[in-house]
Image (cartoon, rainbow, N blue to C red; front, side, top):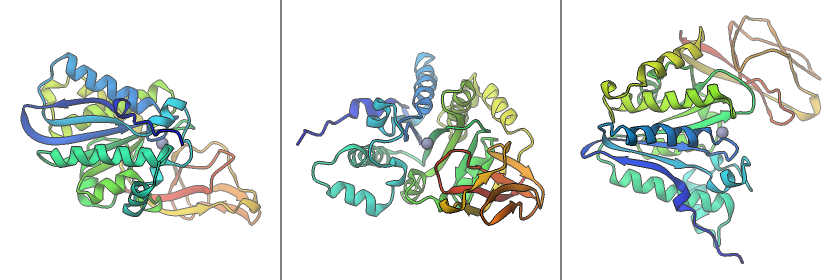
Length: 308
Ligand SMILES: [Zn+2]
């Protein structure tokens, strides 16, 4: 058997430790290997803190999520690393002899995260940064807890509540069980300058929100907030995801063309068609994450504004 490579030097994108105690901010980019924007923007924003000797308290550390898949420029090698994060799956990964690919990634990233949490000198926050194949408005995926909603509120982009619970094994749920205040962000289309700017803006805002840096010491903060506010446009700040339309492959699901990733619609609007007939908006609300790719079994989600 091939020897398992350890890739811990590639895991840590950057790390800055304040002299004073304070909160910890963990940033994970590239949980999917075809989404390097989070890695690049974390390196850039933390590099600027270093270059300008920005005073910080606590700790900010950025990790590459799926190091092996990033190196191969592919979403994953054998399985989706962002579905591995349940206590049972992590334990199973740890029990695997000669772990390969995402099994090894799970163990190595879990070790790195546990070490950060163990040495934290205050509340731990975590951002998991993603991009998508289709163009779209940046948004956050947040859990149901009040602390997580309160954290997400500061980022101006739409926050989807109720989606994370439909996705088993995502990192943000797992870290929440360890006491972290977490948020996943979809910044926009892979490799688009706008997605990169949105992810950089989210990191900058997070540094101020959690209190690692003072707003006065972050010259990019005003532009970051303006960028995220502009990106949201007139979409709601908080959206409850209420229903998922599951695709039955044999029914030939076809989304009607032209829907954005988050779009207000009125009751009765034709959203999609399949072998069972027309699929219409059930009430005045929002159509979310419409399926325009060939593969997938989430046709779309449907929700309602909780806060405009
Ligand atoms: Zn992703």
